Amino acid sequence: MSLATAQRPQKHHDERNLLTEVECVLLALLSRKYGFVLSKPQKKSTTAKQFVKVRTLVKENEEYEFELQKFIKARTYQRVEKLQKEGFPLKTARRKTQSIKRSEALYIFEDLLLEFGYIVFFEKINREGINGDVQIFCNGKFVYGKDDIRTIGNKVSGFLTQRLGNALCESVGVGELCQFCF
Image (cartoon, rainbow, N blue to C red; front, side):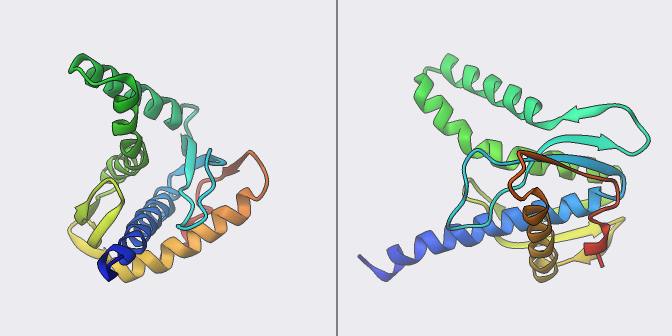
C-alpha cells in the first residue's frame, strides 16, 4: 500500500468533517430566526464527525413547519425514478443518490440564509464533503473563513451532540445557537 493510498481515507474524513462544521455554522446563523427539531442519524459515525439530522425547521413567529427530512426523501425518490428511467437498476440509482442526501440539507440552509444576505463560497464540494477553502459573506462583507468555520462548527456540533444525548429527537429554540456566532 502506498503512502498516498493510506492518506486517502483521512482526507475524506477531513472533507466530511468540514461539511459537518459548515452545516453547524449555517444552523447557528439560521438560529437567529429559526428553531429546529433534531433527530438521531440512522447510522452513527465512528471515524468522522456525526452529521446533524435536522428533521424540521420552524420559522420564528410562524406556525408553519418545514419537514426537511420528508422533503429530502421526496427529492431523493424523484432522482431515483429519473435514474431508473435512464436505464440504471434500482440498486445503482439508490447508491448514486445516497451522497446527494448529505448535501441537500446544506443547500437548503444556504437558500434560507440568502434571505438574510448570507452567501457561502466553496472552493470544491464533492460527494465526500468540502475540499479546499470555504468562506461566508453577509451583504458582501466577509464574515467567516475556514478556520472560523472549523472553530464555530466544532462548538455547535459538540453542543448539539450533547443536547441530543440518548434522546430520539430534541428541539432547539430560536436563538439558542446564536451564542456560538462571534
